[in-house]
Length: 90
Image 1 (spheres, helix red, strand yellow):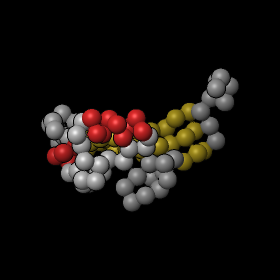
Image 2 (cartoon, rainbow, N blue to C red):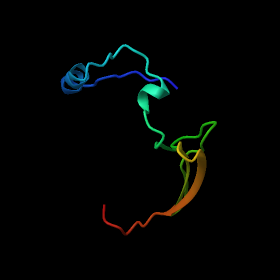
Image 3 (cartoon, one colour):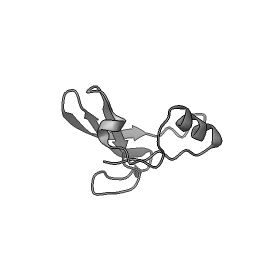
Image 4 (spheres, rainbow, N blue to C red):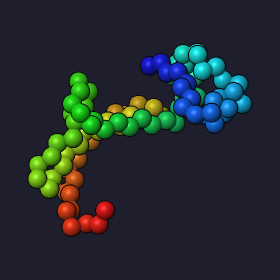
């Protein structure tokens, strides 16, 4: 996995410069996560090879999520059902 800083505002650009970071440099996982106590979580919005997208069945909504924890080397798949209460206030 690689990432690159992409400041979206003058304030973010100033923060990057103040931290003396290089916005053009490709960052590796070791650059991004410096600890063994990290979590990653993702929930599918649309279907992909890794996660199913959100599915609606009347008042029932199904989601498919993935949670990774580096310290314990665990990977959890969470398939959840959510009841949508149409009488609840926005």
